[in-house]
Amino acid sequence: MEQNKIDQLENIHRPEINTNNFGTLAIDLGSSTTVVVFQKENGQPPELLDLPPISRVPGEIPSLIWKSSAKEESYLIGQEIIDLNLFNEKENNLSQDFKRWIGSSKIEPIYDSKISPEKAGEVLIHNIWDKVSEKVSIKRLVLTAPVDTYREYRTWLINVCHSLEVKEIALVDEPTAAAMGAGIEPGSTLLVLDFGGSTIDMSIVALEGGEGQASPIAQLVRFDGNNLEGKSTQVLRTAKVLGKSGLRLGGKDIDRWISHHLLPEEKPTNSILRKAEELKCELSNINIKETLVISKQIKSNENEEKFLKLSKKGLEELLIEKGLLKSIEKLFKQTINSAKRNSFELKDLDSVVLVGGGSRIPLIKKFLSNLCNSIPFLTPPPIEAIALGALNLTPGVQVKDVLNKGVSLRCWNKKNEKHIWHPLFLAGQTWPTNKPLEIILSASINDQLSIDLIIGEPQEEGSNEIIYINGLPTLTTIESKDQIKKITSTIISIPLDPPGRIDQDCIKLIFNINDNCQLEVEGLDLRNNNEITSQNLGKIR
Image 1: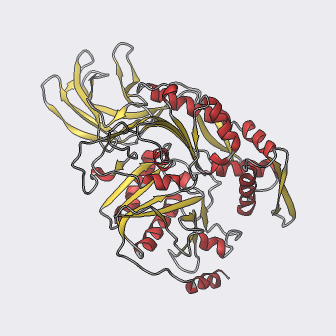
Image 2: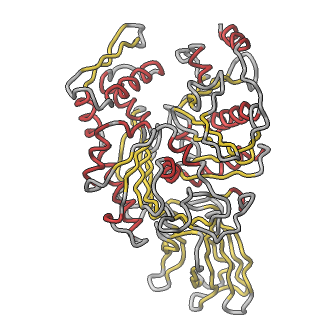
Image 3: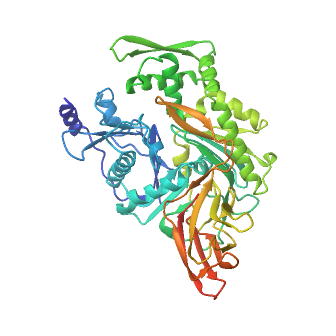
């Protein structure tokens, strides 16, 4: 049956090919929907691309991958899966909600697809690339990434795009791109809440410009250290991210909460979760009464007819009970505190921008409005705002970003005679660094032959993380203020020749964060003035 359905796709009309159009392609890979936008070089308005048969409407592709059993490495993408009604097949050939697991150290059992999250994302991006390349010529590819898993996600994206024949590849932080997509005035400072399918990202962005100054830009991260083609001859301009935070929780988790709340005995199948999502979207309409009950018919696991019934008031009570508002408040405080390290005050905010499907829930806007003391809100088109903002990039720009999390070095404390985590850079530290950080290390034992450099990220006390209990996403709080997470398993060892002694300083290390947010170190042996070769400790963020 599946093969017959696949054969039906061969007769679908393909659009006329026009490869004379050169320009920039932006892809915003989302948990539910992936947005594809193209802009020609001549400055014409951005175009939401229609890519049949994988797009639902122009510019929007459902983030779904189906591995066909008929052929090895044969996949169906996006709307193809919905049109062929493969959603309700019992096999686990379907991959959905895969974005949240890309770069994750642990994949929860709720993701039960045969396709790995990384592979699913790769298939989607490559498939989009192939279809767009048939229609236009791409000179620059712009991709978006979430805040919370930025470092791991970035590494994955670099590998995925390695084989693509394009001169320029840029990466844009999703909340900052959202700010650009909202059409904010130059010189503004704004708070961006991006409530997507699998993540909530929040950031405070200062957009330079205004009063005769250069126009603002989006936050751009350059892949592999390559500058943008066609660098501007103007003086470099800076776009500054003042503070940011993120949480791996999103609209897909709300769907699971709704399903479990209304049908606690039913396993949340794809069809049930889709109905829960429809219910959530309808209850997010600001024009319906809070007591109006909306009902969605579903088929139970025993093929019985059942109903999902919920009111707007019931949905809001459920979200409050699950701790969603408290989590948003913690993200808000973390973001504000991070920005305060860059001389920011809440009164400096000009606007609040809400994007992502979850931002449609009236409770979210109302709650955030109270936190922001009635600062004006902007609500651009929630789905395509990020992709449109990602296009607003300017060649020849220097970007000042901030670390989402701090960086610490495990080293020996001579006074207390024990190993401690010593802060190198704090959350909110701008990068690339203007001046390096120097630190002097000594041996922890006599006749020590080397000093190991172990780098970690402090986990902020009181912040939230997500755990899964019986497949249900649950918010928990990080209690320990001393909890450190190692960034990489790789340990760089610096030889000591002659061997070190406890009573003497051995080496001076100089730490720096480069343009690609990579931590670099070089130094000097204080006992003989021998230089310690510069080494890369890996990506941070």
